[in-house]
Every structure is written in structure tokens, then in C-alpha cells.
Image 1 (cartoon, rainbow, N blue to C red):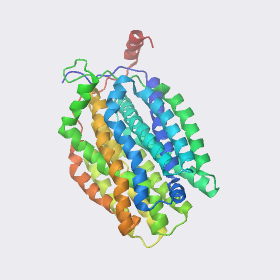
Image 2 (image 1 turned 180 degrees about the vertical axis):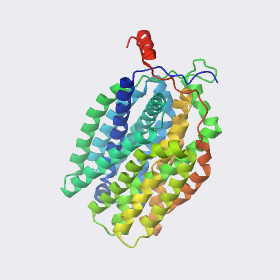
Image 3 (image 1 turned 90 degrees about the vertical axis):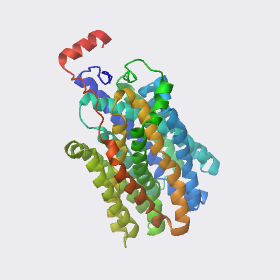
Image 4 (image 1 turned 135 degrees about the horizontal axis):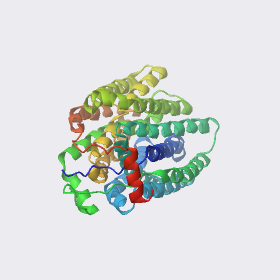
Length: 419
């Protein structure tokens, strides 16, 4: 392989600014999603949805994401990571408004809004992961899990604010419209500090068009295995996001605010584990860490489902969130090991992973209608077992090491680029 992984040198201050912008993109995406997820029980009650029907409604989010993800690599080549996140932040904000207002009129506006939310979230996700991988390479150390911790932190903020809104009897419409305004204003301002996208080259070092490069990634065995691994952890994470509140309310007969707080416990555990994860990854490696965490997730899931009371169920949610934490971000890092192929491979891995969000809601809803939502969650353990067997696919690729950002190189870069 030619030196396709060589990096343009930026000053430490420029990289730090890009890192903060990447955190903002992840936090904003998490906040937007959790703002919606925290109000699922109220939307369900207003629309009088059974678990199976709720699963089909939630399917609209996954459908939008599945449409967006396969073409995200093309979108990124046409635009860039900064513009993509900006446009999708506006679209997702519009989607929250449609859901917040539309649920008062019936299911159809909610389906439309959730489809747009899923589409925006899918393209946004790929763009911020590609930018995060680029910043990670410039820093020369594992940091992707901390960006995903930013996503989890955003979801914690969103969930806790949702709990407060429920406790204060704030209408769903006011809550979601307010969240939409925050996302539409803050995120586009922050991502202006993204690094310019790296030049995407093929393995021969020649400029390559986006279409052949992106489509070729679907024929790479390692990329597909990483995608299935991410699918398993995405199923675990997505099931927790969508169903923990409902499972606590239906299975443990808890109050709505308790259900939302259980959701917040799950998200907080993910956030803390993602923040501390890079140290474990640097010390023990990807494969060992994700295998142990998958086991922790299974133990937590079993405890959540079969606990005799709510406090122990909360402990289960904490372990479930901890174990689920690093699967998705580590999979994204593995997909982006080679910067020349990062956009295409991240698009493929995310596309496969998001199939969990496509199949997860209706599967849990279908099982929930027969055995109860709480016991239906045990389906997650099957996919986590598969993820443990596929973990070897995450071993890092051998690519050229990042170019150090010395002061002399920064000066050369500034003279060449005008920065």
C-alpha cells in the first residue's frame, strides 16, 4: 500500500478545536435522539399503541436510517463531513417538530417525522464518525469511544431533561420543539471547527471516484464481519434505548418518571464506560475488551429481566449499559483504520449495524405481545454471543502511522495552505 494514510499536519490548537467540535456533534446527536426517546411512553399512550404497534412505529426511524446509510459515503464525497452534519442537524430538528406536533393528530405524521429523524441521524452518524476517526489519527491515540461517550452524555442530558419535563407535566410538543431549536442553533455553529476532509485515495494512491470506491467496500470480508459485530451491539444499545422505559412501566408496574430514570441509568453507565474505555483498549486491545464487555452486558440484561424488584433492575440496567458501551465505537474505529477507505467502510459498517434498528423494534414488539416486553429483551443475549465470536475481525489493520504535528511541519503546512 502506498502512503495513503499520511496526514496533513495541523497545529495542536487546530486539532483540539476539531476535537471539541466532534464532541459537540456527538453530544448534539445524542441529545436529539434521547429527547424523542424520553417521550415514547407518552406518545404511545396518546396513540393507544400496543407493544407490537409501537414496534412498527419505531421501525420508521430505522427505515429512514437504512435509506440514508448506504448512500452516506456518496453524500460525504459530494459534500463534506461539516456540511453533512449541518444539513442533517437542520433536518433532524424539523423531524422533532413534526413528531412533537403531529402526534396530536395521529400515527401518520409521527411516522413521517420519525422516518426523517432516522434519515438525518444515519447520515449525521457516518459523517461525525469519519471526522472523529480523522481527529483520532491526528492525535495518535484511541479516543473514538470518548466521542461516543459524548453521544451518551447527550442522551443522558436528553433523558434527564425528559424526566423533568414529565414530572412538571410539560407537553410533548413544547418539549420536542424546544429541543429542536437547541439542536438547530448549537450544532451547526460548533461543527465549523471540523478538520477539512482527507483526500480519499484508492489502494494504488490514485484519485478515485466515490461510487466505485464505496460499492467495493461491500465485497470486503473484514468490513462485513465488522458490520455484523456492530449490528449485535447496536441491537443491544437500540433495544435499551427504545424499550427500557416501557419494560419498567409494563413489567415492574413502575411510574412513568421511574421508567425514564431507568433509561437514564442505562445511558449514564454507557457514558462512563465510554469515557474510561480508551485506557482499557490501549492496554488490553480491542478484542479482549469487547469480549469481556459483551459478557457484562449479558449478565446485566438477565438481572434487568429477572430481578424481583426495581432497584435490582436498575443495577441490571447499569451493567447492561456498561457492557454495551464500546461495541459500536470500536467497530467504527475498526472500519476507519485505513483513512483512504474510511468513508466507504464506515458507511457499509453503519448500514449493516443499523439493520438492528430496522429489525429490533418490531422483533421486540412481536415478542413483547406474546411474552411481555420485559422477557422479550432476552433476545439481545443471542446477538451478543455472536458478537463475542466475531471479535477477532476488530484487530487493527497495518496502516502508515500518523505524521507528527511538529512546529516545523505546522509552518510548512501554513505556508502551503495559507492557514
